[in-house]
Each structure stands twice: as structure tokens, then as C-alpha cells.
Length: 296
Image (cartoon, rainbow, N blue to C red; front, side):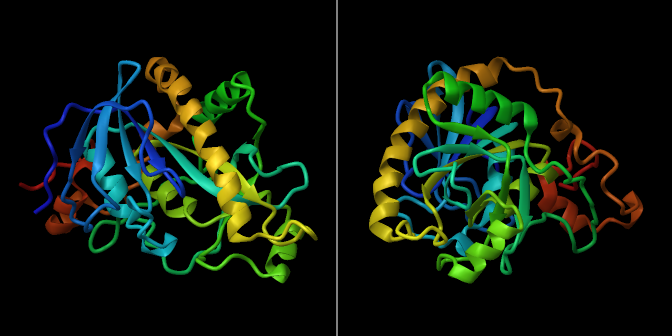
């Protein structure tokens, strides 16, 4: 049986990627373990306050980095955050750059997404309830704009726009793949955004990636990706990500939410109410309860 914790609601959440397993500045921390119908989230969700604003933090790969990108249970993660009242997700992740001007330790706020994954669960629907949400613009423009402006104010080297190509991993690209992605005009490459972005859209949660460049993938001679280089840039990015989060959560709390993300599921469910599977409706719970009565 799925359960939702009675902790006070958090409107904003941060999903931390490689190197980010705790959120500096989070006060009055409480660990919340949410049971979901889609299995266990990556870890306990840490709720608390940053500058008086309630928010939640979830380490994507688990504390200690235990989960491969393909092992991250994004359905459980997004369902759990939705059940806690989350309306906005800042997704922090390490990426490789496919462009000369997107250098290591730069922050990128992309506006497009391409899926090359093979083993990801990226929908809550199926098994008796069918929905097709619009996904032409995969990230929340209003939130990404705010994140970009805040990053620039902090003096971070930041870029707005570009296409994030999501690969399966866990191995990094071959040179042929890297060159292909460059010729296709993609900007950055990572392993985690696709499932989170699609599921957040189905859950009517604003979702914006904060893509932190650690390397040039393997296309640039003399700058090929390697673990020591990645870790070096990763640590610098983590420090700047903590600064960005601290500076932006209060602004997000005050920002009016009138973007398309808020009503993404409206009219997206194709199944007639009388034909919906009751067990599936029950599993969907907080995802659909705004539009459909969920059986007890």
C-alpha cells in the first residue's frame, strides 16, 4: 500500500546528482521515507528549510552513490515528491559538453531534450489508464530563466538554451558517438534527465535541469573525459550549485506559477472514466487525484 508522510508540504525540491548527496544550508532536517506503488525512492527525502523556505532534497544516486543512472527509480522519486506537495524540481546533474564554448565548470540551462536511453521507465501510465502529455518544451522556461539569471548574478559562467542528449550509460561515449552528437547540433550529454522530465510533466511539476559541465565528452583532443578530471570539476561545481540553490529558493517561493506545467495533465488522459482500471487509479494517487476520484 502506498503511503504519504504527514510532514508539512514542500513546494520546491532539489534532486542532487553526482557529488551532491546532501544540501548545505538545509536546516531543521527531517528524513522522510515515502512508500510508493512504484518501489523505493533513491533514498530518504530530506525536508527542511533554506532561509526560511521549506524544501525537499533527494540524492538521485543515493547517499554514497549506490545507483547507476539506469537503476535510479525515477517513478518512485517523482511520485514521492509529488505526494509531499512539490510543485517545482531543480535537477542538479553532471554533464559532458559537446560545444567548445560550454567549458568545464560552466552551468547550462538547456531548453531541449533528446532521448537515447533504452532501459528507463518514463511514464506513470499504462495498465488500464492511458495519458499523452504535451512534451514539445520539456523543461519549465519560467523556472530555467530564473535559475539562469540568478547564476549570472552570482558570477557563475552560465548559458541559457541548448539541447541535452540523454544517453543510457554507464560507460561514457565512444568518439564516434560524440562526433555524431556534435554534428546533430546537441549541446550537452548526460544520463539522467529524460525520465525525470517526462514524469515530472505527467505529475504537473515544473522541472528544470541545472546541468554542470565536468568535461568535453571525448571529442576534444587532449581533453578526453577521464574520472580524475571529472571528479576535479565535479567538486567545484558542487560548491557553486550549493550557492545557486541558496540564492534561488526564496525567489522560487515568491514566483507566480502560471506556466503550462501546472495543467499538463488536463485533457491528457484518453481513457474513459468508466473504463479506468481501479487498481491503476489507486497507484496513480497524487498524480491524478486533481482530475479523477482515486479509489480508497
